[in-house]
Image 1 (cartoon, rainbow, N blue to C red):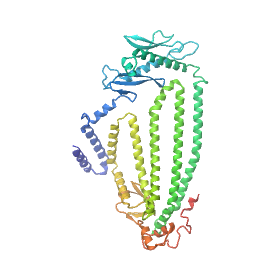
Image 2: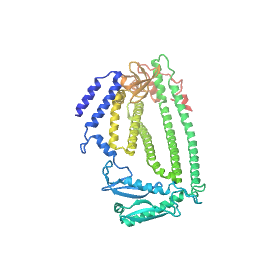
Image 3: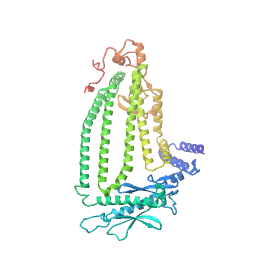
Image 4: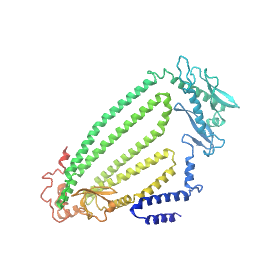
Amino acid sequence: MLRKLVQLVQNFAQSWEQPAHSGLHITIVGLLAFALFTAWVPTTFGHLPVLKVWEQQLQQPSHEVKRLGNLETAPVIFDGAPLFTLASPTVWDRSQPGNQLPVEIRSQQVEANLNRVIEGSFVHGNKDGILTNFDPQTLQVSVISLNDVPVIIAGDGYHSQPLKLVTVTHVDAEYNGQPVAALAEQWRSLIYQSLYAALMERSPEALSLHGKLGESLIVLAIMLGASVVLWLLQVPLKRRNRRLRLQQAAVAAEIYPEPSRGMTEFDLIALRARFLDSFQHQKTLQQQRRVVGFFRWLLAWAQVLVWTVGLILALTAFPWTRQYVRQFLGTPTTLLLIWFFTSLVSRLGSGLLHLLADAWVKFGAAAADDPQRDVLRISTILASIKPVKTVVVYGIGIIAALVYLGLPLSLVLTLAGIVGLALLLICQNFVRDGLMGCLILWEDQYAIGDVISTGQHTGLVERMNLRLTQLRHAGGLVSLANSSIAQVTNLTQNWQQRQEALHPKAIGPRATANGIANPFNGTDPFNGMDPFGGSDSGEPTASEG
């Protein structure tokens, strides 16, 4: 069946290759493949359609509910903190509970009853100015028996009818390992202490400038002070990054000439020599920018941490907003942590790749036939791998975030596969570019710093990744998709070995640059002359600052 499906998709894809219809055609193919996949592919368990399994997984209880065999438990959250845990028989199908009450629904009912005690719907007219439903001075919480089942109720001097809070069941007693009466008395004590503290926190004295309001103002002042300090720390880093960027621009301006109508062989040779001489300096500047960028990234996340902690403390100070702290500490903070660790892993991965590249240059390139070109090739491979690493790391981070939000892992992976297949069909040119880029790197056809000819363009490879190659030539900088390069001639590969055989006495970095200079003929235009005007420093003038 799958073979027939693939053959059908391939035949349908090949039958409509006109550019005007390619987008619509690919969309139809993707929808057809998705429909056939979700309708026909059975799962291993139960031989049910995939969408049915997804529906059952989405109907599972929330992450607050814990299933322990035939029992399910859920916490009762009051005033932003867990108070006690309820237990109920397991409800296997949430869509059809029947006469059973899911434990999370029971927990929500108890929380609503507790909140009725402290809400401000009833305003007392006494001189104390209590703005809560129940009076803390006359609050009473007791246990009564209703149909031989303990029930915890609450009352005060202003309410003639008591308020039912929670019913203590035998399932609760079984889960907590206590008799029903003992558990009811324990819960009564916890409820009274929590309700009394919550009512007192809502009194005018507690909300005055000497109470919660003053605490929130102190937290706000500390948060603003820390934000100013972090901003001041970022200012010199921004200036340093700007200076490094200007130095890189100055070095590039010294290397690359202004676009002209023509560029001779001598110009290409001189361009490559300047590029090789400034390569290490450019690499050093880029490393310094990475270090500065890492510290700027740390300070930015420190700023986020200050704001997050300040917001949490401000919400905790007032009882009306304290219930939102748990929500804020839950999903948003976890998503921020996933984002932080994803970005951290990406940056550490980049640093690890650079360390491996430096180690290879230090221990491996010295024994190579052409050490200088091996260094350039390693830099080319590194520049091509880093975007792939970034996509993989952030893709895993997005999957982790979706799984935390409640989507089943199987659903996320299946959707990722479908989206990936659709992208492969839509972005076929990018796929071809990437495959061609891998072949270029694997076969070592050319690397950064080589002078190549593609038939239409001849120039210096300034930048390369898996998708495109950028050449510097007479007309400026030209970008070529890797899949469009049908034939390439590398004019600089193995220069050093040939010139060392012809000039065995040439030593040193300048002699090496002169010895490998001209790939077009057997003469050396740099023999006895310096393209930099007599300077043997090997670095452009702009790099001195």
